Image (cartoon, rainbow, N blue to C red; front, side):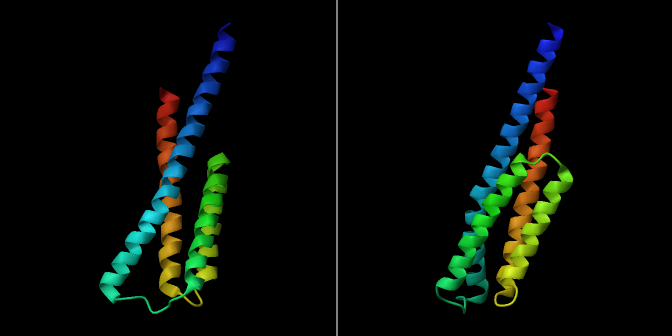
Length: 135
């Protein structure tokens, strides 16, 4: 009977950890467009209107956001911390390689934003997951 109780308790703790990871990474995905809007407003107020216009940069930002969401979904289901760091590093490197030739400021902004939000979500999920473990 005690074995069954311990097993059920472990499953409940694992479910809470998964839910906290999902919630933290979902919050990061919700913060990405908000931070993008704030970044564009800050750039416009400091430097004036952006010089590059058209569809190309807007589509690139949508692609970066889609990659960010997919990477965070993979991070959510990954248990190994080293694998999570490899995924975050790959996301940052992909952003830099994709945008750096034509849009260096955007490349630095989106690499920092996607890497920073992902790392913040990993840290928050670990913190809240450890609280779920002790509860």
